[in-house]
Length: 317
Image (cartoon, rainbow, N blue to C red; front, side, top):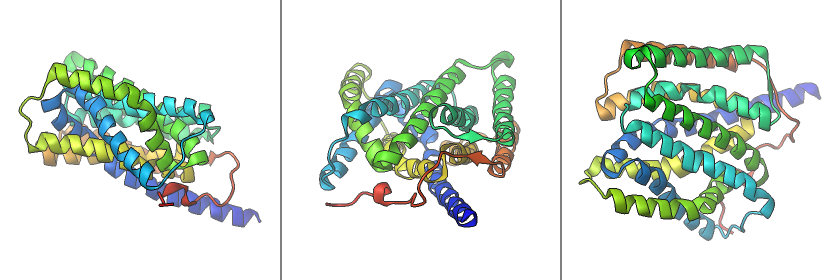
């Protein structure tokens, strides 16, 4: 019986990691796309405007699938998710990218896996082993050293502060989203979070657009805004929240350590940003900690064996 349970648990983690990897591939383009969009529309317009456009997509999906509204008991979680991944992360990364590069942001945001695991421990009831925390702290220390060593005059930059605030926002939103996903499903979670946040995101985006205006956007600027709205703000969460639910928050969150390397590649290809020796070395070390964390044990709360259900895919009713 124990062997069967272990096999099911192992398969669930593997499937969760696959979903998580798909989500991270999508998210790895977020910083380069955000930088392109911010150049023409400004951080506040992009930060809140992407949420408005994503909410329009979510409303369409919810209408087509005739999905009933969330229960009142879920409202608190939806507000936390909205504050974290719909408002906080997009806004702070946008503000940071007004003065910093996507390459630097990719490395600083490498602390997100450790932050997400910490929130999961407090909120989600998971208990990672000391080996896991050693690997997570190793990745964190690597990123901190990089930030200090490459900052102006050997100090972190103001943009790094915004990146850290973005990390904190995302960690809370990711962990809370994983909790709610277990109850209503991943795509329901991000869809309703976008709708719930609309009374804030719509007026702020409108005012910001009116005040900032549009600085002669080119195709790349429009493409960046479209990407962060449709993929980074919406579709990416379909896979990401499903992965966190199926594979466990602490375990799957460590896939995020792959994101710096992927973002460095995208930034070089799309933005012509230089790939420095320090950046590659840091990303490589962070990647090594992924393997270390993958081999460590994590005690997850008891859950039913049928972890994969139709909660993770929209269906027309």
